View (tube, one colour):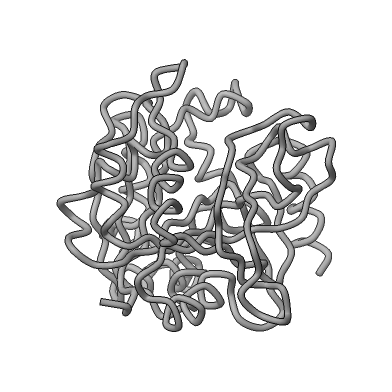
Length: 275
């Protein structure tokens, strides 16, 4: 099935780079302007016509669940004080979308987080959005761009990529392959390496936090061994599918802010506050 109806948000991580605030506040609820990161992520999915949202959380991230749940007492208070507009946006999201939550008991990598949601996702293609990467696009959201490519190649998993400075390749999953179109935006992936050194990087094409994955990914994850840190890397699972020519990469249009770092968060704050 090529239609993408569900978006998965792996948000169980500890957010250690933002300590001490993330000791009590999930990183995904830190605000950019007046909205938390996770709200921007869900907005992108909704604007890409995806209305089923699955969050992989931990028991320390219950406040994310609360954010996307109705707060009747607060709604009543705002109604009585004529301030209902303060929650109008998020309340509309809650009423018009479906939300599910699954729990990742141990932090064992992005691949493990995705596999945790297997039973909820079912046997169809789905999107994965990492809220750390806040993406702004002049026209179609990045997920919407990926959906259009996936319609052309429904049998393939699809990852968003961008060119990065060579000095930064050791911070990303890096891909290589051959272009399928004259615009050199769609790449047939033949190799990918997680955070390689400059000497071993096959290119400077970096994976960012936007994916559309076919259900084949779950079998690939079952066949993927943990890395030296005991984590299941999604790049290792995708490499198995790439051997069958079932992985494409797409050079998206837009601007990404790495809000997984304080510096990137500050840049996003400046952009949102000064469009």
